[in-house]
Image 1 (cartoon, one colour):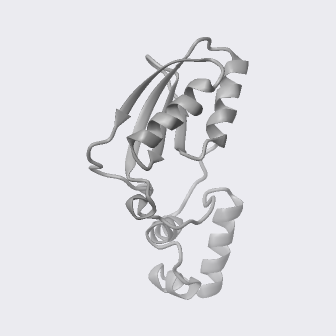
Image 2 (image 1 turned 120 degrees about the vertical axis):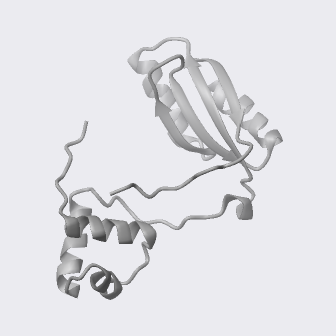
Length: 156
């Protein structure tokens, strides 16, 4: 587990503002958080150096780029040994359709979140990528019918 870094109220205001708009100018961010531009810049630099801010990215509407279908997949491995876990993790990181992959406790070993064009493409992904990973014994697929809530902003 990583160590939690103490954040003061100003750090939290900065992080909330940056989560809402990662392209905000330093001047606007400073004004919104009641800081001077130099103090704001220094705090953001520290938050990056401390690994709290890990990057910035654009949020893309998946339906506008042909990734209409969201799928969750439970994966059961045939053995739970370090080499099988490592090989699976490497393969999951390499698969472009996989948005997230989590090792979980419970009735299966991994939960995958993937985005594909349609169910035909998902079947191709399942047959050509997922079940060919050494150690995969079983999968269960859950296509999403409605996205009720999705987001990346952490409550701070």
